[in-house]
Image 1 (cartoon, one colour):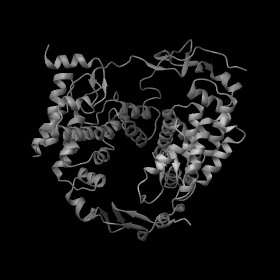
Image 2 (tube, each protein chain N blue to C red):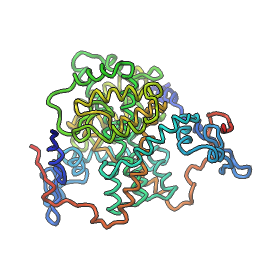
Image 3 (tube, rainbow over the protein chains, first blue to last red):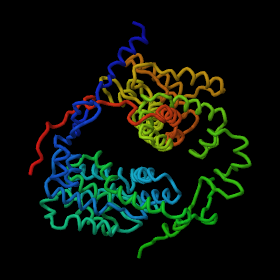
Image 4 (tube, rainbow over the protein chains, first blue to last red):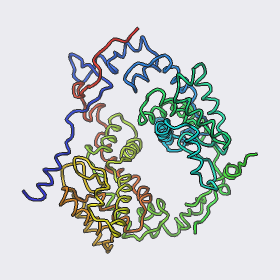
Length: 278
Length: 270
């Protein structure tokens, strides 16, 4: 066999499947048209039955966890959904959708634009994933140990601007993110945090340790801790965070489409300063 | 007392190190005049590289990178990013929606020419330095993750079962454009020979382009930016292929074409 033929033969180890597989959704084909389904099943449950018996939040958790959640899990996620549904018109992802909206971008692009911007590693969905991994890797240590280790690694002087000590925890515009501290309080109201939400309990102690350094919970950290508590896998958390924040992104973006293009400031030449690099 | 000077300085002001548009007059790009200079003397690829990296490279370098772009964007809807574009056409999105979705799809650690170039350049940089000190190809290869007893090195394997048709035109054009073969490219070919001999793996388009870009002094991060939209042309072609066809014309699936592996049908508990 020639060298080239041998190489081609060996590359056939790399075999593509002849069928797409999923464990999430089953479409029962129509009796008359194989391309049309007559019933759809989510993790084995008939969609129509779920519509009658379960809430949206329960079915979202079923979608990502493959089993129906408990009432406490559902309540926890629902509170996170409401708390983060609208990140507000100053978050970069929302601002991206708004500036697209006012500049007459096709309306169907507004949400993808905002969600792509929300995909980032700082205050975005990738930070949620990294924060989950941070919590999972450190939770066997005490919050005090983790705090001390991270603070000891800090270089001095710190870089200017917002600083995240680790994914999901840091300062927000230089100080504690007061909204996030309050959000965590509201999400956990009525729960026995220490016993019912041990991961959030650990992360909250970690956050409290950072307060004297003007740092603490960030929204991404809260989402990460809740997802850890719910047993959502880290990779799945990326899209789930985007999904949670999607309504506010689109609402703000589409609101601007009804306004003239002049409704968001365009900076003057004097407000755009070019600094030549040496 | 908190200090908000950092944010106050930026409140209502943009500081730019890349350029400035002066309406009705000119555009400054890294201190070059767009109207007076670049539009007259540069190719689009030179301008793009300037915007992506801050460096105005010679035209022959930009021309070679342009040829590399040609090798990253085929009008074939089987390729993953092009499939995405074709699905977008199937639902009649705008062409820009389809092209953007395809670019996002190609932002992949497995293919696409952007992220993969960055990964490959990082590997080549590290392994070239190691090779020039003490390490052998065996040592270098052993640092890569292994799958099926083969090292997984981006740029030195290809997830389809054919050899890479782009290498010959890359070499020919490099010669034609008078760009000498640099040290990284020579090293990449030596590594390829070793991998072929021991693992039946060889250099592909990504490996060649990564070595080329390192030879031209680009960083892996620069190159990720240069190649940010490299798949766009083929994606647009694949959009065009589906344009105007009735819905669900692209790769329609019967219900039974999907293998369901989840729980059996069950009742929702009351």
